[in-house]
Length: 143
Image 1 (spheres, helix red, strand yellow):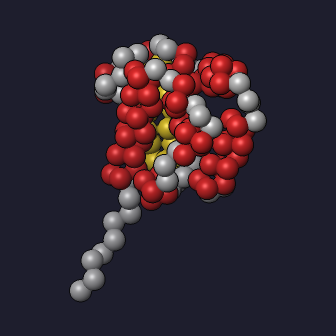
Image 2: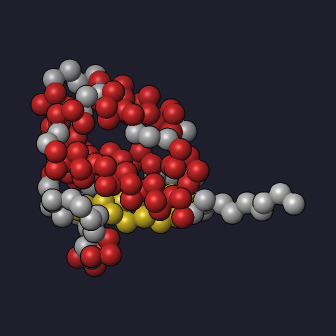
């Protein structure tokens, strides 16, 4: 599934929940469905800097596609980070770099977050994008 298709699917899923508090509760529930990281993954090297809540993010490449997982000590931050990890996981680095998660703003989710939580959202996206940039295929320059 392409990110454009995922964008439509996730956006429709979030927009179907008309009440902003219910939408946020849904995001928290999604985060709660993810298993917590084992202590071995809750390391400083996996911490997302700039977040008020403690947030850990792991990034890897499997068969040429990005895979992301996260955990946080904040249920809301974890839920938002899970949405981003699920959205970008399984995609090629070039697609991860080029597609922004518009479904968050289109569904009005970002608008209802505190400044600190919006900052966490931004930092997760920046970290995911930076990882994908590092793993773009190397192309040979023209001669």
